[in-house]
Image (tube, rainbow, N blue to C red; front, side, top):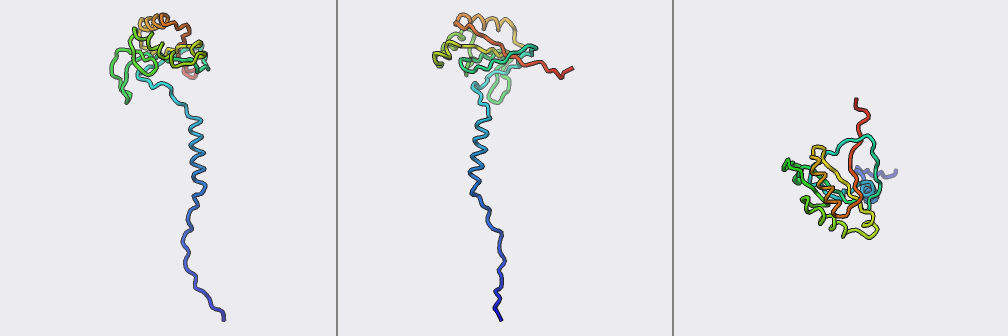
Length: 158
């Protein structure tokens, strides 16, 4: 007669984690590629007006954002109802716009500097007098190309 060995109960085999780093890096690279990085952190809250005939500017080089709206803190709470002007990453007054634009020009290459465009993103409740003052300050600073940001009117809305 042969001898039979008593079988011991086997445990659950360990999980093979060899491909986990590959998967994690693949997902990481995917999110790095598709994520839109914000160039300027807004320090003002603005709700751009709506328009019917909007053209999108695809050029990103030589573009300086000027935001006009109510100032907010880091948590997004409105600090004041008085509109403020943001050029790049700092809040300025109308008289300081020329110096702020010159500072932004200094950061650009020669090609970008020759195609400098200022994108105005203005809150819809801002008085037009302030916008005109900003436009005059930009004209004195030598900015010839200005575009206005707006969002398209909802077509579904009835």
